[in-house]
Image 1 (spheres, one colour):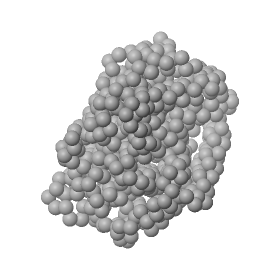
Image 2 (image 1 turned 30 degrees about the horizontal axis):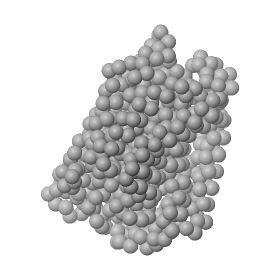
Image 3 (image 1 turned 120 degrees about the vertical axis):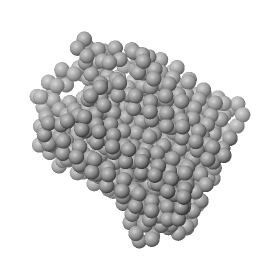
Image 4 (image 1 turned 120 degrees about the horizontal axis):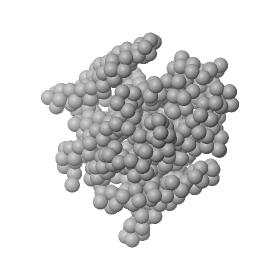
Length: 546
């Protein structure tokens, strides 16, 4: 960093963008089932909201890397982290404004308009990609490097405050403060009482907030430009591998979209989605093998911890997003007796908001606890903070839902899940690899309980996935760039690309849900947590961490 002053003030300004990411991303949990109802699409199509939003992260980071690699100049370093975030906010503002004409004149069941909505979300995501590519290394650089993962946890806690509030605000805007049954919502959509004009106004307001945030960054004197003094290091072989992977992905989803021009074949779509997953995993694993034989021209991808970390970020974002993105359908499905697959009363789009909020609130609970180390507490104070802070965050989730008019009594028992997470923190001893392994194991157990039980137990098991995902991003990020030296910035860019997991895994689960049922489709989440636990074990050995 060329400027290193006023860390506290700079960090407080920086984390405002983390709030926006959380607010919009979590709002998709309410927006997805609404789109399915309004546009009358299947579960796979509804998950294309995630495909557009998170796929943009990949393409945005990839474009920046290709431009930098081709010119030999680090574009983001040329701009500076601060300006990169400003440009990203302006791009997201444009996407939010595009949402207005994209939805103009749409009628219920007009599935073609849904694809215009995806274009607008893609532009918003491109802006987020630029913001996140700059903000994560920026946060790490604002102070002691060893505390970098803790600052990411602090920023993640603010991000999760946005994820907690987002679903509630969007549900109130779309449906009002009074929960409505499925038939009531259908009647209101048919009569025009609920229309896309509400969503248009929401995104105009969001666009205004993006613009205001850009102005805040532009006029902030406390925030340094944040330029890295190191030269840009080319990685032509890594670029070739990523381009091959991109061509395979574009080909897969071209044929998938082509299927929906007529009567879609579920098996063909499932096979194509699985192939897109294989394309990502296969390309990275083959790249890792080739780089092990000859490190020249592979850049950051010559390091096994980085390549395995790319897969871990891909898997982590995928499982975090897919659990909540498909949760609305899990709770909404009516098996014919008025019950959903968990044996609970089926819920409407307007009734699931508190549960989506609680899921994302679980991430806030964990990230607030993970951020404690930033403030350097010691002794018994530190122990008590690890116990009290998670429950304070839990109280915030309950409070936000309560003042919004939702019944929060059903969420009280979630306090037991929070206690399990606190135990995981103590067992992890602030060691990223150990903590990640413990939370990966807890994630496996939680989803298995959700699959093999019913009622409130199953519901809380799925919701606790948010608790166990909470600390994974900073842990994976810190482990993956450990020891990269001059390739750290490039490695960070590769990791941001792998937010792509949120674009691939939710649609895969969505198509599985169309074929085998929404409840059984959650085996996808089990597989994801298994890899994350494996990554923690493997990278611990690679880096010789105790």
